[in-house]
Amino acid sequence: QVRLVESGGGLVQPGGSLRLSCAASGRIFDIDTMGWYRQVPGKQRELVATITSGGSTNYADSVKGRFTISRDNAKNTVYLQMNSLKPEDTTVYYCYALIRSTSIRAFWGQGTQVTVSS
Image (cartoon, rainbow, N blue to C red; front, top):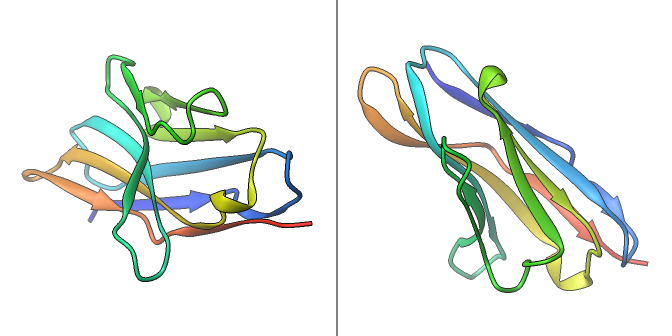
């Protein structure tokens, strides 16, 4: 069974920083794209950033220049460094990974809350 476990969320003041981590474990043959999405209650889940196994990245316009996604392939882990946080970044962040296990499919983490408030 493949699992994605997130950590690093919390409460931070506007302008502050947080680093999210997400580790994949279980029967994994390889991992293609990993990434982060976020979802405000009542709205669709939206892409924050993704990174391929080769290191190509993609960001939502709203986070470009503030957030940086990276991954450690040896540890099956993806990170999201969030700087210059704004109140509108407040929501639940979900880790995503496209994993080849017994088949190729998308997996999601349980979500981690990020709150930006003074």
